[in-house]
Length: 306
Length: 280
Image 1 (spheres, helix red, strand yellow):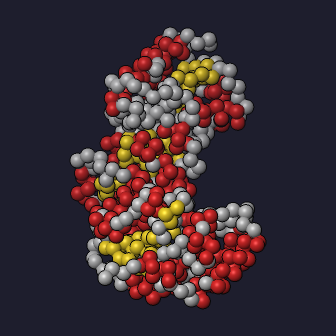
Image 2 (cartoon, helix red, strand yellow):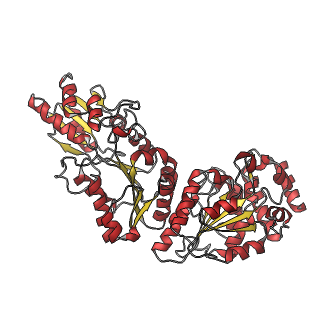
Image 3 (cartoon, helix red, strand yellow):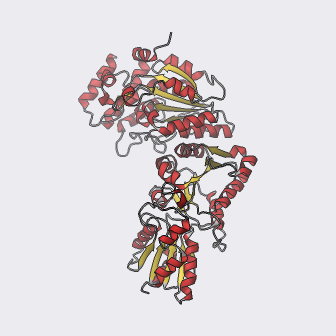
């Protein structure tokens, strides 16, 4: 996903001199092709995220569209105020490309795991928050972003995710439905948890449980109004996200349900715990521990009363 | 012999224009009943000279594309900026009296979207420098010759992001970037020496790769002469250490840290401040 995103930025930059790439000491070879071809539009700055976001804001104020990539926590935690004031308050078209969403950097410990990034970023007025599921959707999102000059925060997955959004060519902010309009089980998810939910859907259907997955790549406004029947018809609604329980998709869903006067008795969630992890291993190890693999999601949902 | 700029700043005599601008500051302070008075009084001559003599700008076209960019990074000094902008006709002087009122365009820190002439919203310290680096880079990328001026407080230099910006400005050899330090050596809690010493400030900026000069921040001719001679050294961003007196021109605010920021200012206090301004 990251490779596709950076390649897309390079391609966008070829056709639009407003597009700039900024990294913070991301390692030798990062976007080398762009650095060589478009050196004026390529910036590999130092380890200074607070400065870089202000720098990007200054560039954006003058009409450029900077895409800044670094590890997610260095954007959301370290430079929160710069994101809030320099970018969001000024409504500037800076694209924050957040590497390693969720537990991708689990082996590097809790300083590097972006487990509460949705919560932090969704709390900033005007900042548009996205979590695409695969490289296909990432590319479509970045291309569509050229027609929208609001500030963006985009969570990246680890990379190499199975492509599951091929049917959706253009990015349109709306939730994507995988399955029938009427199912007993509806899973609501975002980002790379989509693939896990689709795996669980297959397993559930194998035991005769009709299942639909709704993927929300855009988290500010869930736009469920034209999908209400799917949700209303469901016996169980399960929110699945690689994020702490508060402030992310689950919170957004509950807000939406209240808004459209949907009951929440049949709503549950599977998420990361509200704690820092002191275990390492891999992202998959942590997803397994917290019930976020296809198999674990299936097991939890299969015993629900529906 | 080394010039004792701080002493010169203390002895600098204010001319009629500087007194007028301070009167406007007091008008706003009276209207709002609060404000960062002393912080504004230390930077008035700097902002005045910029707008009178240095910046390419047009009050009738605040977003003139070829304008020089000016960011008041120490946003709490906004009363000084408001006075100068009003003096130049960016808005009516009567507006000053609405300072900090609910529907006013003049907040306790300057905002881009509410007041013409404000380039970037500031308030939380340490942001303006990085934004200015971005602006100066934008001018370079577009091959445009407008310049960027950032006015910072010396207390603001406590913020770590300032030095990130300084390193990057020098790395990119942004010689169209001018960082002016309002070096009054006072912070909210006392002298900067007692809080975080900035000395040797000149050497700090030199070592960060800047072309550094010092100036009496209340001497109009000195400021004009310094700010006009640019760039002194090609490929280096410029740092101008403007030695100033916090609260300059009103003895109460020069001598009492209470005037760093004050709320619930009474009419009687305003009368005293106006009297002291006349006497200075």
